[in-house]
Structure formats: structure tokens, C-alpha cells
Image (cartoon, rainbow, N blue to C red; front, side):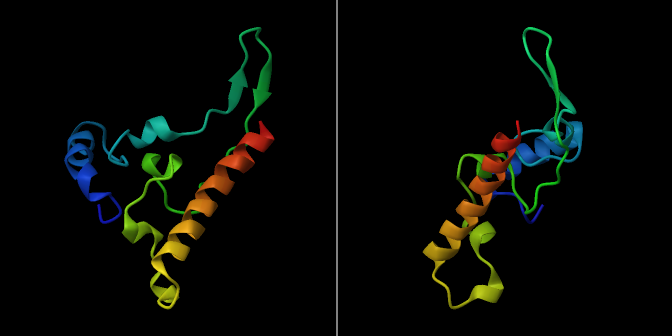
Length: 102
């Protein structure tokens, strides 16, 4: 619960009571990768299953985050803005890599 963006706590509690593990927007089970993509014409393509390399949720997908997510205590002397830009770059790179492999 400590990683949930504070405004999403009410929805996190609601979803948890009905579906279990979640990120405050959707249940964990709906966040799983599909093993293959199926085109409208029936063509199929396998999708490599990956673990997300850093803690992230659906808000991170659109470049939003709780400032606490972007701050790394070991980087005390780096500015908040630099840490936030670095965090955003890491998130974007994950999705760029996924898009490159489709």
C-alpha cells in the first residue's frame, strides 16, 4: 500500500476488497501480458513475456507519478527535476522497447 499514489487509495481499497492485488486503477490479473497477438485476419504473433524492470503503475504509463516514486534516497544531491526526468525516461524506454519488439 505504501507505493499507491495517495489520491488512488480509495479505489485501491475498493478494488482490493473485490479483486485483490491492484495498482489503484485495475486488478493485477488484468495487467498480465498476453502470450500472443491475433490480427483481424487471423495472423498470430508470439509476445515475449517480460517483467517490468522498475515499480510502476498505470499512471506511470502516461508519465504521471507520485513524486515519492521519482525520488531515490541514494541520490540526495541530485535535483528533484533531474530525478523526475530520469524516472520518466526509464518508463518511456520500457514502452519503446515493447513497441520495437511487436
